[in-house]
Image (cartoon, rainbow, N blue to C red; front, side, top):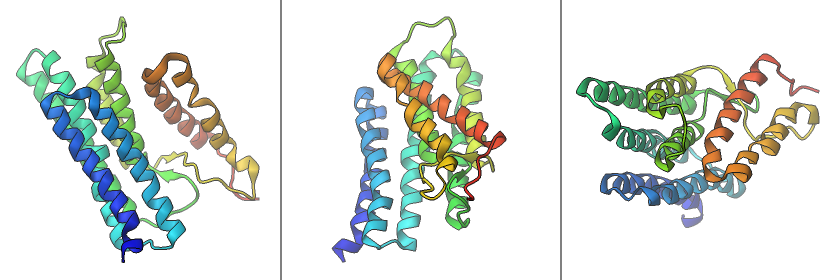
Length: 234
């Protein structure tokens, strides 16, 4: 019984870290939020991997994973970004508009996760932007605001379009690169190799703030792969 539920326990850790991050945001302990994000990401990565290794995958695990992801990569990133932006806004109508965009993002994350649960997987890539990637994108943007990077661009004006665009990408049918490699046709892994090789570079060059650039590159590369696909077929 314990062995069968190990992946589910990891999923609950993902959920717990997401809820913990919301509490930290509420109390103003923003610097600790990213520790919770890291825990959620690692737990989300390991639960599916261990379920496959132990051969204990089941419908409960699938549903539990989506519920946890909705909190950790849907509600929490939207709440975090809104909490950072709201003090910078100067009118109730603008605050309402930002709140609506954040709610729209969460609704799209919910739709995407429900759709994923009932859709049969086709190919090695994602159909629509995965919610963890979307959450990481929003969190990396929040990190730029939190770090106060000098820029001539007022970042808060990008918040609404960013939330709307990322939300739309989650529910779209656009293909996004996954790291499921095809061991038989190496040329089909070209974009995956490119992703692994180039994504870490901004982190090495400018530090943690480079996560946002890495996420932009992921979106860009995925769009390019849609227009110039490389077949997984031999």
